[in-house]
Length: 403
Image (cartoon, rainbow, N blue to C red; front, side, top):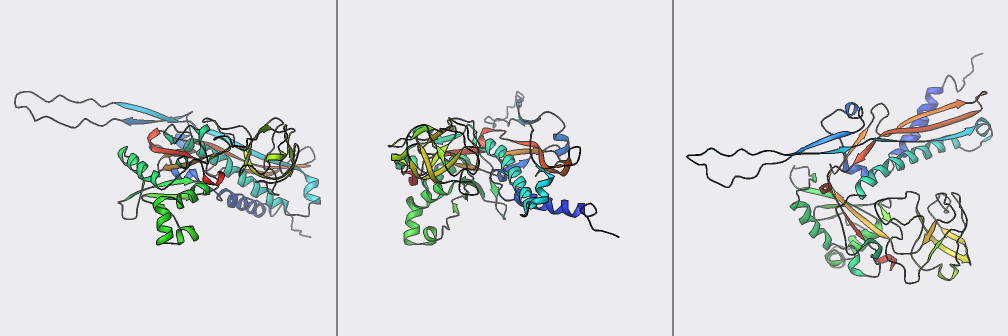
C-alpha cells in the first residue's frame, strides 16, 4: 500500500517553511534602503577577502591663470584615499524535541519559522542601523544627556530641514533622483513622535490649520522640501538617554526577568512615581556609539513599593520582550530621538551570494541518536558600512510628548 508521508513530500513542507520565513524577513527593512551593494566587484569576489577596500581619487584644482607664451604649465598631481567595509556574520537557531511536534495542537511549526524570519530581519537590520546611526556627522541643540522634552528648542521642527538642505547641497551629498532624472531628494528616517512634532511646528502647522487640514487630521505630511519623511517605530531612539525627569526614576531591576514577563521588581520603591514619564527604559543607557539592542521601553501602570504589577510592553503578550539581568538600569529620563538623512548610496553592503541577501534557512533537520531532536536556523554572511562621513547626517532631538 502506498502511503503519503512527510518523507515523500519533504520538499513541499520545506518550501512552505521557507515562504513563512521570507514573509517575515521582508516585513521591516528600514535603514537598509540607504544601502547599495559595494561597486567595482561582483558580490562573490567582494566576499572572498577579509575586507573590501574602496579607493577614492581627488579632483583637480581649477585653473586660475592664463596660458603663458613662454613657459609650460605646471602639471597637477592627484591624491588618493581609501575606505573599507569588513563583512561579518550572524546566525541563530531553534531546537525542540520530537515529542513537542507529536503533542502540539497549535501551528507551532509555521509560527517558529515566522519568528525565525523576524529574528533574521531584525539582526541584519541592526547592522544597517549601526552603520547609519553611529556616524560622526551629527547635530543637536545640546549634548545628548541634556536633551530636554520641556525645552522647545531641543525638539525637531520644519525649520531644521532648510538648514540641513543647505548643508547637504553645500557638501554635494548625492540624493535620490526623480523620474525626470533631475531633482534630488533625501530620505529622513524618524520616529512617529518626531514626525508629529514636525507636523505641529512652524509653517507646517500654519498650512495644516488654514490650508490643508489633512496634514493634521490624516497625517498626510510626506515631504518637506526635498526630504521624504520615512516614519517608523523602528527608527533609532536612545531610550531615557536625555535629560533627567523633574521627578527622577533612576534605579535598577531587583531581580532577573524573562521574556513575556508581565511584572518585575525594582531595587528602589518607585510606586509614588509610576505615572511620571511617558515611557521608561530598561537597559543600559546609550550615551555614545555603542548600542544595546535588547533595551526596551515600557509604560508602567500600577506599582506597589518595588513591584511593577502592571505595565504595557513590547512583548507579544504586552509584557517584556527580552530577558534582563538583575541590576539592569530602569530610568524615566527623556529620550533622544534621531532623524537620519541620507540618499540611495549613503551606505554600502556586502552579502555572500551562496547564502543570500536575506540569509539562508538551515533545516528543519533531525538530530540525536534516535532523531528525537529537531532544529531549524538561519545564517548570514555580510555587512554594512558608512564609507565616508559626508554621506549620512543625523539630527538628535527630544519630543514634546515626553514633556
